[in-house]
Length: 381
Image (cartoon, rainbow, N blue to C red):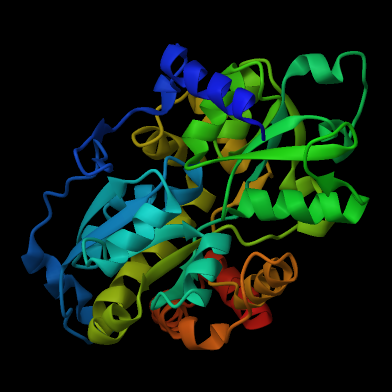
């Protein structure tokens, strides 16, 4: 992208009046992260006794969970609001971050115990030597791209080709960017400047990329939930949702990630954490209205938009590690040249989820939600 366009974008940031305040429901701290308004726990560490059903004492009870400004991370929100972390003896604090890099840094500095990180950045961090292990899932699909309405005016339908000749804001090292490149490659569309190419302009965070859409030099932008629905409510048009693209269906998005050493040091505590998220998943399947209200405490936008993102069929928040899907995605991003190949097996732990789910099924042998999760795990581990 030429210097003139970059300068105009920078000027627009200072002049922008829309800073996505609808998503600023958390207070920013000096460290670049913020504590969610509902995130400070008042739980009693003595509640660790509630883990007696697991037959193991927790090695630690204070947990810090890092998340992004996304409905994709609702399992953590619901587990907190519905008391499932407390039930498992964990005092969990949820903290908002702006990027995957910040989340990974939080894990490595031991400021975080768990982070919800996109699958692509998780893969690239691992390939670069970061000792971070994926041990569960958080969301499948749930993202796409939106474009200014004037570019589709008069059209009844369109595909990714509508982006040719356009400047598209995205986030490097993200699932959205990888998916865009997969679709462009499939259509034989090159990346770069020119009428027959797509010029990708990279930003540090999804919020920055979205805000750049206010500038007349940016025509379209990547979007993870809830930015896609938010953009549509503001008059932008959806280029595509990944769940509707055959090449991208069932794409693992956010993963549960922790420092590898921490998983070895605190196995019972991570088992308790996973049990809480599995319980939260069950709640989301049986209590949709309250789930939306729980999410709104962290993602402060209209409940109708939250409902669309969570229950509209565009993404699913499931705790299953979905190893097969993630390995397939790793192979795809290696082919794209995103990163070098590596042995992902060393940094993928499915036992935590497997054991947590097994213990809940033992306690609730007739539960159809848990049995459904077991069936999925058996098929896609």
